[in-house]
Length: 263
Image (cartoon, rainbow, N blue to C red; front, side, top):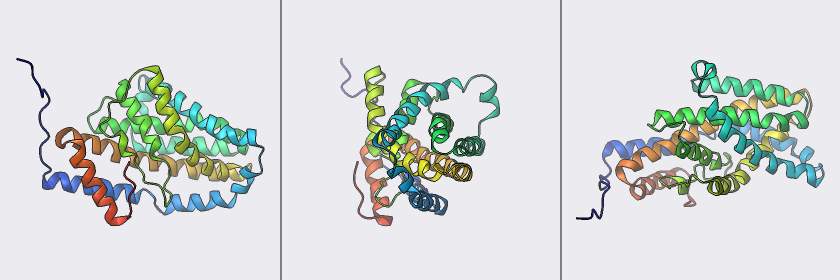
């Protein structure tokens, strides 16, 4: 006889699951902390530097975002084997690496900041892979790497940003080349919006070194937090079902930040 419903039915939400979902909603809300707001303020103060650039230079940000995401997708996985895998494991170590990278990238202003983007993105991508592993996912599998890529679609911590894009939770992301390109095309614009703040703060040579270190530290922390939300929700959804988990998550978010734009 053919099995009609081979997967086990989702179990109803327990009080423990509800508490875990609320904690993830609170975690997303806290991700826009004082440090991130300060960096956004600093970035806005020098945003005019970017606005005065010719159109071709401004369009580099979108191209740089796409390239950084593509490169990090490949390089972060490779770095999880060998010497680096044994020495760089914790969130704090990844934040330290991102901070050093940002300082070096900001030292020469916008040109070096653009050149540094793939390095910073790879470090953050690697940190996100580490979070995925904490929630029972294989950081080297293609499916998990695509989920890590989706975390970069969380955008920035602005007042109008919804944080994690829950349309990716529980989704079966294809493993083909076209699917990867499509995911990057969807994620890159939101990531580029974040990068514009980072580049604005790094646009002034030498002074940009301090700004680059601060922004990279903050961005690494932000995306790590978003990764905990993303993969925490996925873990809960595997047991309790997508609809129940996401409905509860959005309900908790709505209490703190109404209205919420459902993804």
